[in-house]
Structures are given as structure tokens and as C-alpha cells.
Length: 225
Ligand SMILES: C[S@@+](CC[C@H](N)C(=O)[O-])C[C@H]1O[C@@H](n2cnc3c(N)ncnc32)[C@H](O)[C@@H]1O
Image (cartoon, rainbow, N blue to C red):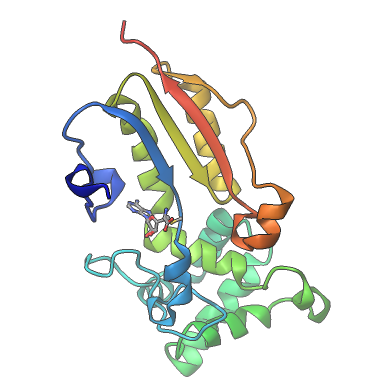
């Protein structure tokens, strides 16, 4: 129905160059549900797949398996703490590095998730979110340099807009949302439309649990000069 008014480009938004001024830029961040649901992509701790986690598998960059192998224990702990806000980062990093040394590479995402869960005290393993959630988030963010490319998007996208054009971002965790919030507040090219982020209604969260963490912020491009 959209015909030739739609052009689909597979590229990292950090390297995107628009062909002309835009009415709106909408960034829907993070990993997408279909990617989570395909075990081979290696994002899921619920489905067993290779430890990959690259959003663009045609790209050259290292996989999650390469990453945990390359980093020193302390670097890995710092990464899990910084990108996952995981309190047990040191214990988890120690466990991962010792497993790799003793048994070699993990078979896949399920064995890594099992090892991470084992770092939690038994009671805490039964919480609402899986114990491996934060560690998987941290590795995925690092493999795809998600915070670096988000910073580049926040820097570049206001220049893609025509005056009055809209810049909306849907983010999925606090590390992303903090960056969007600060950028919208400080950027002199933009005027905030939302002060507080909009979140999904309870009905939507029930129908679509992955919307639980979504936050939507919107800003408007000011006239130049
Ligand atoms: C939340 S999903 C969007 C889903 C889509 N809006 C839909 O309704 O199906 C985020 C998508 O953006 C992609 N993505 C994440 N970071 C990206 C980046 N830096 N550049 C381009 N795409 C990216 C992911 O691979 C994923 O497919």
C-alpha cells in the first residue's frame, strides 16, 4: 500500500545519512522480539542457541562468546556491572572465567544462563525476572556497542529534522532512557514535548509483557537561528 514511498535500509543508525530533511525520526531501540525468539541469534537465555548476540550477523564484530573469552575477569565484571547494573557482577565474572578455563567455551546460551543463575542465592533464583537477564543485557549491549551508537544517534538525529520536526525515542532500560532524557534536556536544537516519559498502560503490559520496560520520549526541532 505504501509502494515506492517506502525504502527499507538495513544499516546501523549510527552510520545512516538521510537523503533530505525529515518530518520525524522515530528510534525503537534494543533487540526486537523476533530476534529474541530465534534461538540461533543467541540473545535468549530461555532458548538454547550459540553465544552470538550480534544484531547484524553480516557485520564483522565479535560475538558474545568471543567477548567473554577475550576480557579479563575484572574487565568482564566491570562490563556486567556497568551495562547490566548487576550487583553480583564480580561473582558472575569469576564463575564465567573459571568455567572457560576449566571446561572451555560454553555450549550455548543455556549453559551460560545456568552458570549465571548458580551465582544467585537459591531464594533469589525464583524472582520475577530470570537471574541471567542483567548479564545477558550487559553482554548484548557490549557486543553491539548499543550505548555508543545511541549517543551518536542522539547527536546526529536533530540535524536530520526540518524545523518543527519530531524526534521520538522508545527505550527499554534505564541506561538508555537516562541518555535520551539528558540529551533532550540539554540539546539546544530541541524542545522537549514530554517531560516525563510515556509508558504502556497496564492492559498493554498484560497483553505484551515486553512493553513493561518501554519508555517513550518526544522532542521537537527548533527553528534554526
Ligand atoms: C525494538 S526492535 C524494533 C522492532 C520494530 N519496530 C517492529 O515493530 O518490529 C529494535 C530493532 O532495531 C535494531 N537495532 C538495534 N540497534 C540498532 C542500530 N544501532 N542501528 C540499526 N538498527 C538497530 C534491532 O536489531 C531490532 O531489529
